Length: 196
DNA sequence: AACGAGTCCAACCGCAGGTCT
DNA sequence: CAGACCTGCGGTTGGACTCGT
Image 1 (cartoon, rainbow, N blue to C red):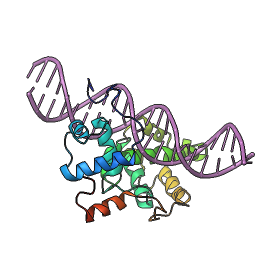
Image 2 (cartoon, rainbow, N blue to C red; image 1 turned 60 degrees about the vertical axis):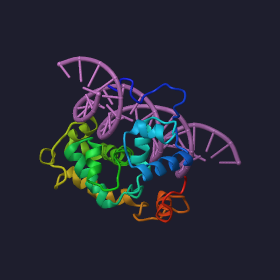
Image 3 (cartoon, rainbow, N blue to C red; image 1 turned 180 degrees about the horizontal axis):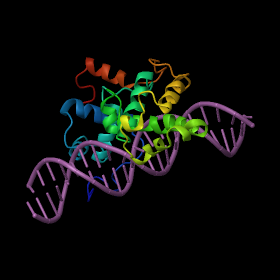
Image 4 (cartoon, rainbow, N blue to C red; image 1 turned 90 degrees about the horizontal axis):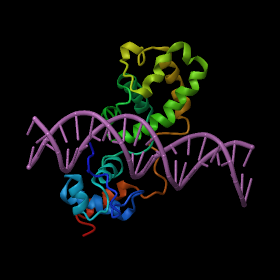
């Protein structure tokens, strides 16, 4: 149903990583005009990007309230809990975690938690909750159905492992030496129109 | 020091559903 | 009502980075 929407083969449309210049143009445009129809916004801002790409960049990276990295133990538990309840409804889960994006949670789940579960699977998982692996297949299982999130062996395993998962990822760690979006947004505080 | 394997994340793609004309 | 267009979602992937040998 994208029909001919934003997925264009137009050679004028840029793809791939965003440059700082593009980020600044997009941020500045939205700061001054607000969000709107993304395709129009992309054109009006003079960006050679699809509206879709602009939206994604804004929501996942540029938005001032977006929090990046350092998933806290509380957030981690919440993700596990909500995933056990809702399955791969990443955007729904993300809404329960202020400042987190669905993309970040999805990545986090796939790279950390899912791997951890898989590892555990080799030992005691199979006997305790064989159905849990269906989570990747959108098998939405309620907490009550699965027993996860209360005192199930699976949840205990996960909870016990949280300590080891979290070792080396202390929360609240500063972004050492990197230019961050907070810097940009604090700059915006002092200058209402830094570009134009 | 070099290189291959593994990990992580930003960004893309295709699809579904909603809204507008 | 039908078709065009837009947004949002979930899955996937390319490539940068890290780590082990």
